[in-house]
Every structure is written in C-alpha cells, then in structure tokens.
Amino acid sequence: MHDFLFGIYPYIALSILLIGSVARYERDPFTWKSSSSQLLRRKQLIIGSVLFHVGVLVIFFGHLIGLLTPIAIFDALGISHGAKQILAVVAGGIAGAMALAGGGMLFHRRWTDPRIRKTSSFADIAILALLLAQLVLGLGTIFVSLKHLDGREMTKFMSWAQMIFTFRSGAADQIADVALVFKLHLFLGLTIFLLFPFTRLVHMLSVPIRYVTLRPGYQIVRSRRRRPLEDRRSAHDDLQGKHRSSTTTAAE
Image 1 (tube, rainbow, N blue to C red):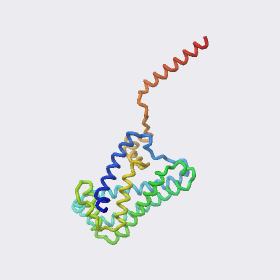
Image 2: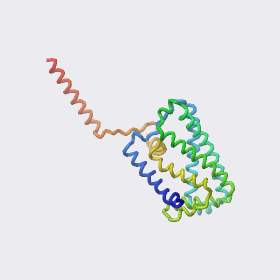
Image 3: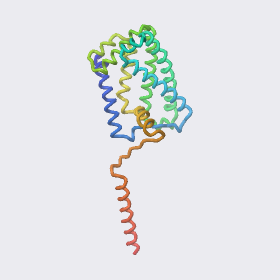
Image 4: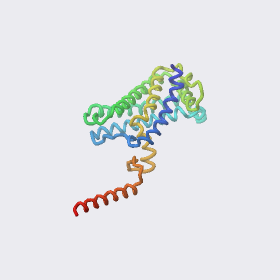
C-alpha cells in the first residue's frame, strides 16, 4: 500500500489535475469561476480571503521551490540542510497560521450564513474543509521537524518529489520511515490535486494566466454559440422582416 500511495498515486493525481483542468476549460468554460459571494458579509470575506490566499501562496511556492530544487544547488549556494529546515519551519509556520486563520473565517462565513450556505455547493464546502485539514496537518509536521533540525528528514522529501517528477523508480522508498503525520500530509495534498479540476480551485489558474496578464479588470466570458455574430444578426433581421410582412398582409 505504501508503494502505491507514494509511488503510483502521485502520477494518478497529477495526471487528473492536468488533463481534468484542460478538459474542464475547453468543455465547460462557464463553470470556470470562483462563484464569489462578496456581496454578503464583505468585511469578513476580505480579511479571511487575504489571510488565506497570502498564506496558501507562500506555502505553495515554498513547497515548490523547497522540494523541487536539486540538493546540489543548495550545497553550491552554501545553504546547509539545517538552515533550510529552520527557514521552512519558521516561514511555513507563519504562513500556515495565516492561512488557517483566514480559511477558518471563510469556512465559518460559508457554513453559518444561511444566504451564503444556500449558494454554496457541497464541493465548495468540502474542498475548503479539506484545505483546512491539510493546513492542520502541515502545522502538525512542524513539531516533528523540530526534532530533526539537521535537515536529514527534509532531504528525504526532496528526493521523493524529484524522483516523482523525473519518473525514477523507487521514490516511495525515500519516505518509507518518516512520521505518519508527514505521510497523511502528502496523501491529502495529492488528493487535493486530484480533486482540483472538479472544484472552484480551478480559478487559481485564471488569476495569473487570464485576468492579470491579458485583460486586467475584465471578466472573461466564453460563449457557447457557434454561429458568427453577423449570421445571427442577419437571421434575426430576416425573421423581423417576415414578421412585419405577415402583419401588414393580415391588416390589409
């Protein structure tokens, strides 16, 4: 089971993340949104949203850089494993606490306000609950990491992640003896990747790609209509002309 969860499941989750996101964008563009409820309890939304998004972004890019940067680069820069471990604990702890506080506010707002609850789908509430659980697990790993400030435990996760992304066998063996809280954290993170294309999380991809770089200040809307606008106008004019003609004939 360990080999499946950490040697095969990562490829399943990442494949569904990639293929599912592309398929949803192409087939159901109208569902590619965050379903904002900002008109209701706006103050709580703003505070919670800022804390949550800033914290999650710091955590995401921290994990991305920390796990996928080759160990040789850190060694070449003179950054010891212990220093990297301490930086990860401090920065991750602060960002995790921010994200957990903000996410808690967002969850409370969505769960307790009847009007917001009515506009929320099961997936909206469930994915937020999973993210909060992931943040709790992530903060829980700090207490274990403090016992391994030499950084040796962290290098196991770096080796695992880099072997997964370079399609090398034996990746699961790298983390066979790590603490259970780390394994739960990894498994839940992969599960969130797997669920990503089917939830409102997809709007995260729109922020840097569409709304910021291409058309800031505008909402992107894709029409399902396949006929060109001029053809539709021509058909409408023809229909109006026939209607006027039949009305005149009847009057005569």
